[in-house]
Length: 124
Image (cartoon, rainbow, N blue to C red; front, side, top):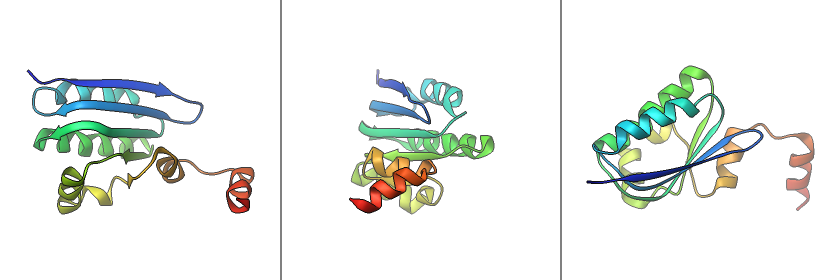
């Protein structure tokens, strides 16, 4: 039996989901169901703890991206390991889901910045 753990953090402007374990045929139905509940606001999926993706795992990412697009919200991935990242590029998922190196980078992709945030970033 495979399992995936999911931890959800709600912040003022977005939701972060930490996934760990294996995203496969056994675990994906529950993950998809829970993610559908969360796509009402910008979503950062941190998959750095996911040790294994099968086709259902990649399909789950794609379905989450489609759900976000249908709701008009943004999605970004953080921590994708090299092999599944390569599969995402081969399948073209990277054209629909930004694959980021850090949560900070993901937030830059997802959230519009305020003038103060841009000024702080430019100054240093």
